[in-house]
Structure formats: C-alpha cells, structure tokens
Amino acid sequence: MSLKIAIQKSGRLHDDSLKLLNDCGLGVKNGHNQLKSNAENFAAEVYFLRDDDIPQYVEDGVAHIGFVGENVLYEKNRSVDIVERVGFGKCRLSIAVGKNEDYTGPAYLDGKKIATSYPFLTQKFLTENGVNAEIHEISGSVELAPGIGLADAVCDLVSSGSTLFMNGLKEVQPILQSQAVLIKTKELQPDQQKLLDQLVFRIRSVRKAKRYKYVLLNAPNDALETVISLLPGMRSPTVLPLAESGWSSVHSVIEEDAFWTKIEQLKAAGAEGILVVPIEKMIM
Ligand code: PRT
Ligand code: ZN
Image 1 (tube, rainbow, N blue to C red):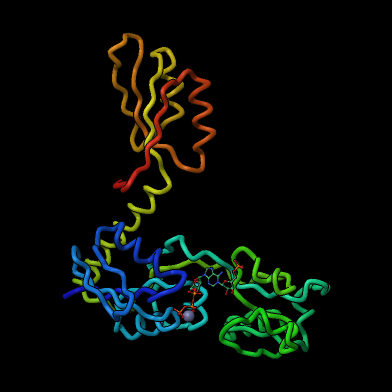
Image 2: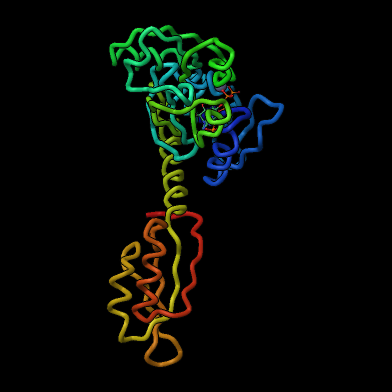
C-alpha cells in the first residue's frame, strides 16, 4: 500500500513540487524520461504527468494526490478536494488588450474576440459580467493572437507582465489569482489518508520553517526584559548566562516579515553579536 502522488513531468511546477517532496524527506529522484519513481524513504510512488492531466488522474483515483496550479484545477473543473495551498507557481489569469486601447470595464469586451487557453474560466467571467464575446481557444502563444488579427483581446496567465508588454499588450482585468495546490481524490482508504496526513504535517513544517529565522544574540542583563518582549519565540526565548557577568545569551525565532524591524529594535535595546540562522524544519 502506498500513496500515489502526481506532479508535473517538466515545466514551471516540476522543480518546486519535487523539492517540496524531498524537503519532506521522501527521497524522490527526478522524473526525466520516466513515468514514475518510487520514494526511497516513504510509502509513495510519484507519477510524472502533464499538468493538464493531473486533475483527472486525481479525480479518477489513479493518483491519490497531486500538485497542480489552481488555474488548471478550476479550468478542468474536476471533482477533487484541495488539501493545502503550497505557495509556489504564483500567477494570475488576466484579460489583456492592446496597449493603446481604452478598457473601461468588462462591457468593453462585448462583441469582441478573446483568445485563450482557458475557455471555461474566461466564459465564466464573461457570463458573470453579462458580457457577450466570442472565445477563440488556442493552446499556446496566446499573446501573439491580437498581433496577427486573430483576436481583440487575450485571457492568459501573467506573472511579471513582460510577455504581454513585449507583445504590445496591457493587463486590464485579473480574473483569477493562482498558486500551486495539493489536491486529493474524494475517496481515500484509511491507510492512504494516514500517509497523506503525515505528508501534510511535513509540508506545513517545511513551509513554516521557511518563514522563520533562528536568532542568537547577547544582551546586558538590564536590557533582557525589553529584548525578551521583542522575541516571543515558539514558547518563550531561551536565556543563558554568558561567562562574562551581567550578560546573557538569548535564542529565539523571528518571522521573516517582521525581521528587519525586529533586528533594529533589538540593537536599539542593547543587543550585540546578533546571529541569524535559517531553520530547516519547524515542528510545533
Ligand atoms: O507540459 P505541461 O502541460 O505540463 O506544462 P504547461 O506548458 O501547460 O505549463 P507550464 O509549465 O508553463 O506552467 C505550469 C503552471 O505554472 C501553470 O499552470 C501555472 O499554474 C504556473 N505558472 C506560474 C505559470 C506562470 N507562472 C507563467 N508566467 N504558467 C505559465 N506562465 C506563462 C504564461 O502563460 C505566459 O506565457 O508565462 C508567460 C507570462 O509570464 P510573464 O512573467 O512574462 O508575465
Ligand atoms: Zn499544461
């Protein structure tokens, strides 16, 4: 009995999916030129598939779980459950028009032709906004369509925006924010559910660790109260006396977002010799 995990064979989600599984200790070899690979340290097999096929494989239970972009998941509209958002593959699905066009809102699209690889999501957006437009489905290089007279607008994935810019287009209407998600089939056997629970616990520990840094510093004892109030830590900071009397060493964790502000406040409070160390896993 093992957990069958689908990830993208090659493309933008492949490396991050594989890295996440290996950060979770599974021991999976890269899938170039193979359909599947056994995890060395976990009861799991990894299937390498086209991202478009992953929702269906998971719905059918051929794979128990899989990593796929929300854009693909909602476009395919398959019946699976989202277990966890995993933070990579961030992008948005947006309407874009010629850079000199005056886009005033969805009504602008009335009677226009829109090229997209996402006909289902595009139509959903049009319907929700009461717009009548013609959808022209193409499978790649959607951004070229307006330039060759195939469409008036596109609905495509955007991350930096440079592809649109280079093709004389501008993003005017995001219709979906997307990132990679872990999905699961509706019916899992109890043993498989147990493996999934273990994996999700590890994924959360790995992702949490990335958001935090381990901090060690020295502080004069009369500054300890302020320093400790700045460092709540997992429970509370560790405080150890230094060989030099009147000084202590303080160990704690700081969240990435607040990092530089905290460091400045700690220095102002009298902290010295501040060391910041990455954390690999964080088990709460
Ligand atoms: O072969 P397979 O079918 O598995 O792969 P694919 O070619 O369909 O997908 P791939 O590897 O290109 O993308 C996989 C997933 O990555 C997508 O489904 C999204 O969930 C996610 N993702 C994140 C992106 C982007 N960012 C992205 N920028 N997918 C595609 N793009 C493309 C976009 O289509 C456009 O051509 O990048 C271009 C825009 O990028 P910017 O930075 O110029 O705006
Ligand atoms: Zn694809």
